[in-house]
Length: 432
Image (cartoon, one colour):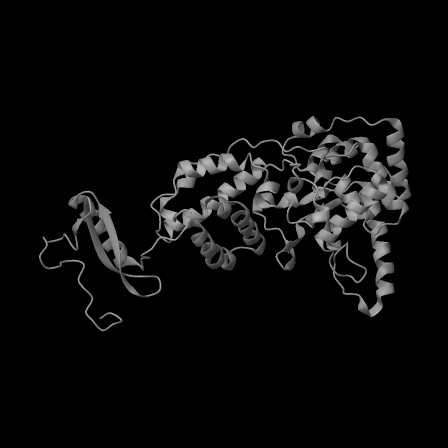
């Protein structure tokens, strides 16, 4: 019985048609048929199939009937935007890590929906996806997303004032966008049965256009000036800057570092902990590693970094005493004056302010890794130790970037900086 109390018509053997033909009837320039199905909302509804011949429609009807017998069937195919929104909320958010959800959500919101969102899910073609990916790699995202236009009028500096900054999407981002869409369509195919094939599986990532950048790395002399400025001002983040520049730590790794992760006896650092801002949450978590890659979390600790951390320990003791009962205890190495975790965006602001005070070119925190190899060479760290610090798979890769030979003045500056921290320059012994 239907919701209206009338008997539901039989879709299998209607009167007046041949055995097995179901509800097939002439329609426009071909034929059509329908099957009574149960929708995902538990309603009964007709689902139609179409074709140019009775045989084609009959085959489609048989498949649809089998599908309807197994599971609920939607009667209308959603647009890509509608499906991705549901996929994020019903599949990704409940089953994956918050950081993974934030990653997928950003790819969907910033790139996929603006480019392909209006397309019906079952009508998406590989050719359309490939054309879109090719365009994505060659369009300034500041223009496309209105980044500069979203700033207050007095702070606009590029695309909104007809001075395009050429913020092109990098290859890794294009690949991430493609992989996100592929993951969603895999679910649409294997679980929801909304598409018969994943058209993104056949799309290739194009060669991305190079971004125009005025500068993305410091010289050894600039890095030395930056560190000396932080030391002279007794910056509480001085040790963090040393770890980023000399130990190659990323921002999330240095902010998530715990005292228990530091092994001075073995001169090693466990960098598995990370602090990340995911939406409205500040998450401190251990990176999930496989058994084969557990060792990747351990990196050598040069003496200049160990000395900086010893000074940081003394500073934190002093800060804890000053805060008294307002101190919020944790094992984090770098905290606010109340013991709470440092907000990643505030760390970026402190880094930018230090660039201005030191009189060096402003670069992103992530770009400091390009300077790390040069600093390690200036400190006479053995290439094999540097390979582990830089997390390269082969020493040959390290040697390609381990090339800058600083002058004696810069070497002396670094030595003086290390001595001021109470440390010595690390020797060049081969750990192997």
